Image (cartoon, rainbow, N blue to C red; front, side):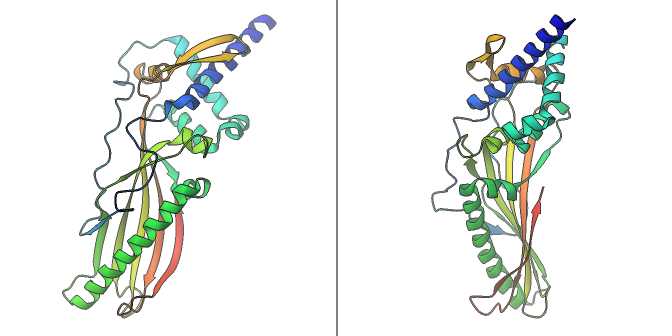
Length: 283
């Protein structure tokens, strides 16, 4: 019995190391997405009249059709071991909370949207936070222009919505944050907003602006990576992780994060007067 337990523990460590380190080797990244967060003019362009999300980048091929290959006890056992490990404090300390939550959600096998706190992403990864601050400032100026127009128009409109015309690509490198590299890596971001005139008194408008982050958590075919474990070398590739999806043991999903800002726009006849009312983190 002791020998059997030791062999299982050895296999347990081998499996978990292989799967997690395969992800570290680049499983989350795509070659078709740039590493910056800049558009040609340095930021997003906003349009009024809708709050709908702009077109998002097409996801990669992923692992294929869910539940399309025969289920095996071997892979099911691996999935249970991985889920147990991801729930431990050791795993969260080693890889990060969001990294473990996202991978655990994959093994939840629901395919439901996984939500996360984009504000925390901005705090943990400074270059993402800088872009977030820049875009919120740009959106606030656009909201002020809208507020001036609808406040002076006297045409019955009290609320106007707006959105960015496009979504731009962003990326978290492994060296910047192992946690967010494993959780989202390549993503798209965009901004939506809503302006209500006279919501805080005559000549004052209230603006709600939301910074959105979108990602598809999938497992495109990737290169084979040799992992050296206590049980010996193991060859693992991204396609192996995708096999959980194909066997119906796990399921790929969409990830969404956002951060919400609320502003009061006062003295609309002047060029200044932007006052933050509240800033709330969404997840």
